[in-house]
Image 1 (cartoon, rainbow, N blue to C red):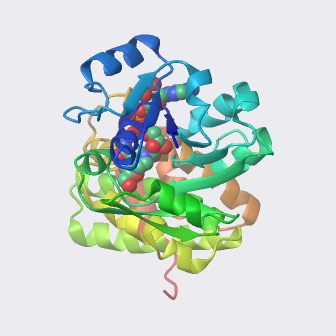
Image 2: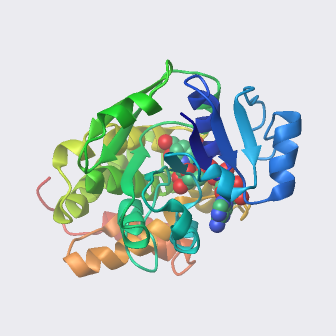
Length: 318
Ligand SMILES: NC(=O)C1=CN([C@@H]2O[C@H](COP(=O)(O)OP(=O)(O)OC[C@H]3O[C@@H](n4cnc5c(N)ncnc54)[C@H](O)[C@@H]3O)[C@@H](O)[C@H]2O)C=CC1
Ligand SMILES: O=C(CO)COP(=O)(O)O
């Protein structure tokens, strides 16, 4: 049975590489030249340098071909997902759609599974999320992720697990997708702390308070606390706040150091901070770190003003 991956960025390509251990994979790129180059060279040098596409991965720009599969992974940046689903709903109805993106749609305030349900009501929606860098997955390093699906998904869990990629299953789609989205915001903040030279102790404090902030909003929105403590929440928070492989962390580090950052690099946490600040107001939840990151990324405040504002908040119980 063929699995398709739509979106040939770093993550989509890495997933295609690992899933090819189980059977044929179709990797769809929206750009025909990129698809042809990948099919010919068996590489995706632009997005995932160094990885080789196994023989049973077919790179294509033909969406009709790619959507012939029953199981389809969506691996485009989060802010592109709603438009993609709406434009191609007719090809995606009735399929199992596994979102691999981390974020909250700015316009609707929805996560990936709600976007899928809205655009393709007859599809089965799932989300694959957790601590994993594309380069690690493609190299075959051991990785564990969360597969969240409100419906029965044991067969899907087996289909998408590979000898090096171990999936854990949950029905808590809200918790899994909010954990994956929110950790990017905290990772930007952790980067700011390091970029501004505030030290590792400050980063540990930030990560801990950031986790409290993530848990507050997620449980208010219906997530289970144990999902937040799992791979998709705590696990991914630790990875992204402590590794220079993370683009969100590197973006924050540049912000903290007053340096420029390449705007062509995907940094999901900026839009997520904005979306979550709106959700926090709606649910009357205090989210000082996300609010600060929105203001910092918009250049409304300086790093020292942000730090001062966080440190001068009223003292309270932990
Ligand atoms: N790179 C990583 O290590 C990981 C990434 N993710 C998530 O995967 C998602 C994608 O990230 P990356 O692959 O890393 O980004 P990337 O920047 O490497 O690639 C994004 C890809 O999406 C394509 N794309 C953009 N708009 C599109 C559209 N409207 N329709 C179809 N394709 C479109 C681009 O052409 C590009 O190939 C993000 O939400 C990210 O958080 C999750 C785990 C790990
Ligand atoms: O989500 C990721 C790791 O789990 C990738 O993080 P970045 O998008 O910050 O690179």
